[in-house]
Length: 520
Image (cartoon, rainbow, N blue to C red; front, side, top):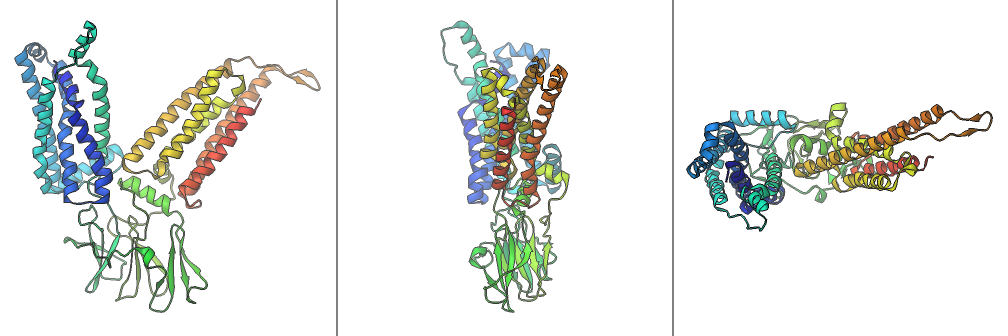
């Protein structure tokens, strides 16, 4: 068995898949429901158990093909064992050293985050934590899986050609590559402890404290001595589990201030004020677009996806300021004069969506689906003149494009969900564009039917061809614009909910598609 085939067998080992699934479950469920020291170390153990096997595959390809001496040695049993030991040793050492350096030194953690963000477009929530080095023995599990792969006996099949393929490890290639793709997704999505943002508020003597609810979180604690307007990061940790410091906002509204004013928060809409005991309410601050801003922040930070703020409410006894913990957007402060201020807390700050770059970062999946919708319009224009296979494919492409939006909703997905939704949007884009090109080529090659003008007889073929191109162009532009426009309005806060924007976009797009399909 070659070193390359052994690497494929190790990737396809059931224990390798178990470790990958454990990492996914830990990242997406356990760390969200119960972030702790245990769940943090469990993710590291799971990753260290399969990461060397992922790295071993390209090393095995290089070793098997890169050296004539290695190729001759691989023909002997002792040589194959030596090449196998070299491969797993290099893979394990590289993973162990990189993991240890990144976890042990702050400068290396910062460099890794910067390099990762430059490559993949988002910053992983990885922190310097020398205690993570206690999980390094999990590398031994990868070595054990590699050893078991050499002793694994392939199934016996009667056909000699298939038997040779099995013995060479080729029948393992498909499952191994599937596991490799899943391992890459799990590795890229390994987000570390939760980046909670500012979800808890406390008073400590003459200062205010703001930080995460969990003691094991990516978010730091910050302190303010001016009523919440400016915040400094604290080196020490504070307990965020006190019920008073992390009060559920729904239990505090409407909130009565010292002057008798009532303040209430309407989720995702506005903050209102009442001075007559709640009989009449006046708009204090419009908060439309919170869902879009949260989605943008989650996309930029690879955040788990908690609801937008306020997560906690506190009145500063020294200044009488009302302070709302707004998660990834810092804090919102109302002074006694009734003026509201967005205050940055460390890296967490209010950032309205106003620019093209922000729109592109937020609506990448919707943009791909808008192009797919335009390509479907190509396919459906002249639909009645196509043969039934292309008709069926056009309908399936239309349903698939809308299905990606309904079931995946790319803009509001986070973590692994966002990666899966983007893959779905790109798949819809590629398939619909191919079908659209085929439909356009068929229409170009089709001979235009002659028409008769009431006044002067036969309409020229060039006029019919020009009319066909105009219909293609009009349907294409209309489908693209009408699909994307509701999501742009959602990003700017004009449409409050992504689900509403999606419903409007799909209805308008279906109308355009029907127009394209029914146009003679």
